[in-house]
Length: 321
Image (cartoon, rainbow, N blue to C red; front, side, top):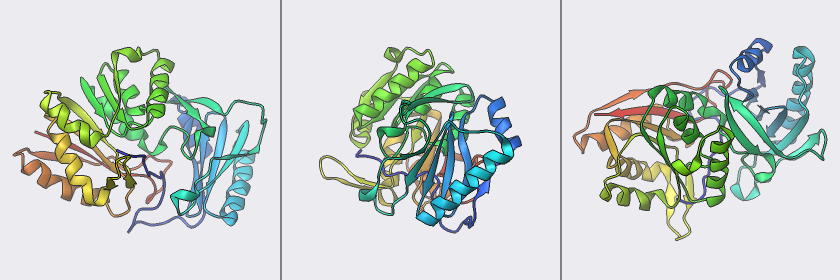
């Protein structure tokens, strides 16, 4: 598949939208730190959001008014909590992908490396703030990474893997993983995440390929997995010119994934497409299982506590039998 178009935190349709920034409490911040989690939201509004990334903060905004409001709010919040970031970055959120830009340093030492390491439940992830529009970790998937570890799978297929955060989480509980992404650069960052956690990346597979072309080959080769992560882009175009739209092609992707699923396989269905909420994901997934005479049970985890209703990806776990 081509490059992802995925935005964490954009409002979903038919959900309440925050008008003013809602900031987490100091007790919530301390709770994150007690679980060795240094990557999370600090605030969310209809005009943007603020993320803590280790000792740094990124303020993402849709307009200059929202930027000013979030920066002022950050100042008040740090005064109230006593927690001070070492650097503050700002990032514009455009309506068109062509207008995307990398974050800019707003405050702090410009000589410090823009590469940093954060933790989530003690798991280490390397981020690169200068790498482009996305720093390397989708914070709204925290609960799903934790669930994958709770499932303790043996073989995991991580599609659209990006920097392989799901693969790292699974490998730490003993799973054999295959991470698939078109971007070799992203997969290299995934290998680095393995090494940050003392994992031998050579014992896991990192495949730069179009997942829609790879899945049929894996099925023919007899590859089977007991956990599969499907978090595709909303829309994109492949190097061969093929257009992808998740609202049109979701069933095709899931059907191909079911061909490599073991009995009782757990499949994460995730999207930031505003036209596919959890109810619609389930409604469209059931026929895919039925045509293969498989039962399908669904589990919704909702969003993490630092993501207000209406923000973050729509996600559903599907267990097939």
